[in-house]
Length: 399
Image (tube, rainbow, N blue to C red):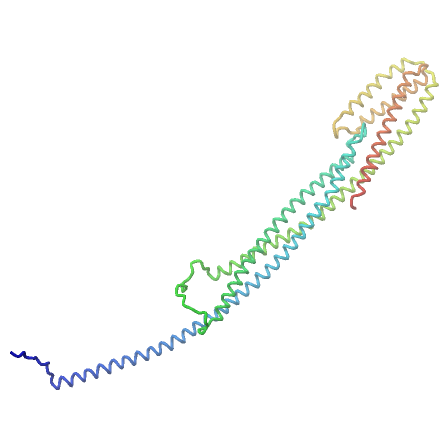
């Protein structure tokens, strides 16, 4: 039995016309929408192109402004670096002044201490703590004080030089960073849409968390500059102090050297006069001994009665010669005791002229003769030390 084939449905003419009309209308609507979209896209492209060009132009202007800012700060940092370098060189010259001033104290200190050593060779009564000794001690103290001051100042100058070099390092580091940043921005300003070395870097379109604000960037360089200026100002002040110290210490040494030399001249004159007086007394004693050897006296009791006062006076003199250090002073008691001995000696001399037996008084005069000769030798030794050894050595000191 043959299978029946079902025919597709059939539309009426009205339906066919209606379908065509619907198709025409939909097509017109889609075409109109497409035209509007194309027009909007064209306007958008034109608008975005204009905006992109404006943005790129604005970036270029900002790059130029940024390069100008970097150039300004580079010039400021350059100037500060150059000023700091000059100040470092000036401070190094001041350090050399201090080192030379320090070395200039070596020989004067050696001379003063050597003179102190020479004068320990004085003997007997001349081993006195006189004005020369006082001034020599003061001279050593002055020089040692000067050396300590110079050393402290030299340490300050060394530290100031270190600080200046530290500030120079940070200025140069900032300058290096500025140079690198300028080179980068200069390269960026040369890029354009036709450049070969451009590529996508979508991950870089963010603000780096390590980045700083413009005012922080300016503040960083400004702080470096202010620190450098502050250290330079401190260095200038210190250099002024160094110049004053070098001049003052040189004058102090010279003034004390003159005081010591004057004390030496005065002391040598006193020793020469004392020696001449002793020589004169020795000649008189020698003459008196000769006269007393030919004289006759008979008053032995009178001679014996003068022995205790002589012993008391001489004992006092001997005992008082043991006074320590500065207590060994030529006070009125000392002069009076010497006068007392001289008076008793004169009395003995008068009595011994009259004595029949001259033995005890002659021994006294002989002792005096030996004492005078010993004292003259002591004075000669002291004069030789002060004049020939100390003064000749001190003449080598600079004026």
